[in-house]
Each structure stands twice: as structure tokens, then as C-alpha cells.
Amino acid sequence: MVSSKLRPLTNPLTERLFGRLPLSPNFFTTLNLLFGAVAGYLIYAGRLPLSAPFILLSGLCDSIDGAIARARGGSQLGRVLDAVFDRLSEGFIFMGMATRDFLAVPALVISYAISHTGVKEPRASKGLAERTERVVLMFAFLLFGQLHALLLLLNVLLPVTLFQRLWSVRNL
Image (cartoon, rainbow, N blue to C red; front, side, top):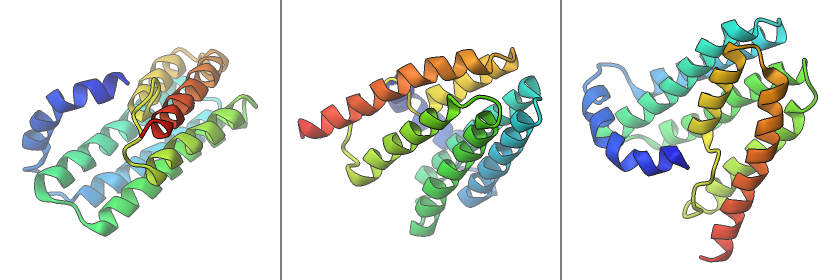
């Protein structure tokens, strides 16, 4: 929700800043996936604080790929890769969490449902814990090794976010 409110202010800046990079949006989309996979592995291996920067890098690459695509005009392949790799990246992270705490499973399922509402109805409003907010929360909590507390919080915020999206679709 916070990120969707800030996006109109930050998009022009990020598009100007990253739109000039000589790399394609798909390069950053792929980095998003790779950083997410590394983070998931590190969580699985019990290296929670070390996973935090990789989660942040994954989210940053997700933002950069979008900025470049908006600045240059993205391709259909790029839009599909972005959506698929975002889900895979987050899936790797939640799978790593699930090996340490079962509360990651409902968080993963609800996260995917939130994403799917946006695919089925792009006009669905944003909610309290969109991907950017989840990345920030994961970074902060895992940096201090607080996986269970993170999952407790996500399992409160994610259903609220899903409800917000579904409610907005109801009112379209």
C-alpha cells in the first residue's frame, strides 16, 4: 500500500535513472530470480541474516526491470518473464522459509492468490502488504534472524491484503 502511494512520485525518477542503463529489463528480471533463489537457499541453510541482502537485491532488481521497461517500452515476453520470475523468486524464498517454519506455507499460498487477483483483474486495488512491503519486511526481520515473527506478521497482513484486493474487485 505504501509503495503504491509512492509509485507516482518515484516512477519518473527511477525511469530516468535506470532507463539509460545499457542492460535489458530481462537482465534484471533474471537477477531478481537468481537473488531470490540464493536467498531461499540461505534461509534453508539457516543463514537468515545473510539471506536478507539477497532478498533486498531481488526486490531492487524487480523495481529496476520495471523502470527500464516503462522508460523504453517493454515487450510481451518481458511482461510474462517478469510475472513468472517474480512468483518463482518469491516461491524460492518462501520454500526456504517452509523448511524452517511451517507458517511459510499459508503465507506462500496467500501471496500467490494476491498475485493472481492482479492477473485476473488488473484494476484491483493494491493492498496493505504488496510485494515491495513484503520485501522490506523480509529484509528487516531476517536480518535479525526473526523468521517466526516475520511469518506471524505476514500471516496477518497477507489475508488482509487479499481481502482488500477482492473487495476492490467486488466494487468495480
